[in-house]
Image (tube, rainbow, N blue to C red; front, top):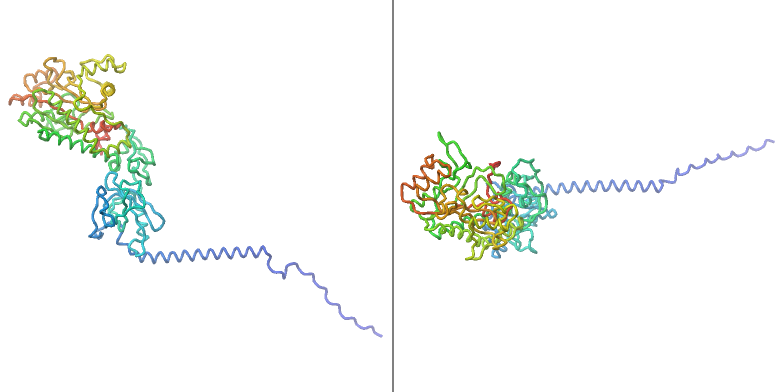
Length: 573
């Protein structure tokens, strides 16, 4: 019997491949999750940028402040009811009122995207803070704030604003108790992004006065913080060459404007004092036919088919005025000296303050000149106190000492030399009474007089004949000296004067003694003046304005007191 066929055996199970149906691992899941998150963030940022761009475009299209800022054009309009102000006279009466101001934008900085601060300077160091903030009504937009915050320093602008009180005094501005809330700003003239010299640098003390050409100092980009006193931080001080090569920024500086204001006041006081004492002003020529002081220190130039000279002094013309019966005269004008002296106390052109007057005794003129100078010194101490303080914050100096009234210091030249011989430095123990003083002698004597008499101002009288020009009258009791005097500030000469020869015979003899031909062109005409009429005795003097200002402030160079200093190596600007 056949055996039954067994059931077929089930197929052997294939072993399970590990993980084939178990799904992704935890590591793979985390990686996929991180990638998805990163892609989502990327998409979100892209969407935000796109939205911001759309929003910016919409906002730009809806900038309602476009008529309130930008470059000034013929279409620029300020409110008719806005009052023009001066920072010097700003007071509480202007609080909350609409005003307009034309000024130099001194500083500008953004405070976020909706606010900016500016400093607006009118003249000198008269500056005020301005604030501009975007508002809800759109009259001040973000775009306007951004524009104002990016205006280049030293641009000239016009603003419209309301005057408000700041939360606390603004220390960086002289006008510290008020600020301007800007509603309009237009750039009248834009400054370059990079200045040859910043205002901060211009306000630093100059210590290098070399006239030698030097490599140009690199322009300075950026803005330094300025203070009321002129004390600034930032780049080092620039040389005088750099200052003169950037003359506008030099003259915009607080310290130079203060010096200029003091100079103006000195000139005004000279004029007003003399007018009160019966003097009349006149105008002498600068082009003359002969050297007015004799010697070689004169500028000669072609004059058609002849030669002409630049006046070394208005001396002859002051005398003509007195001979003509004007009695007391003065003039203010340029004086030229062709001296190749490259020192901080010399210039080839300076401003002279001159006077001449009839006298019965030459000391009448000495006292008049001494009087006008003392009047100037005592007055500017009061009227220019702020300017003097500002200058001293940059160029520190001791107060200028004056003698008590009635105790003026007047020494003869011989007495001054004697003081040097007895109490001065060893090198001056043998100085002569009949030779002119050197600059080191003058300074040494000035130090001795300050110590002995407690004054920075004094007079030396009766200079030796050899140290004076041909028209100086000799002392009838001692022909080796003249009736001539100098006046000094801090040991440096600022005035020269004396009695003039008014007799033609005496004048000719004096000319010959000086080696000058009385019949030479120009000189002959001068001598003939005293033959044409009877001449009254007269005396006077000439003051160097630049030196008076420089030595009163004790500046390191007279060049700082001049508007545009001229030296043997400098004719620009």
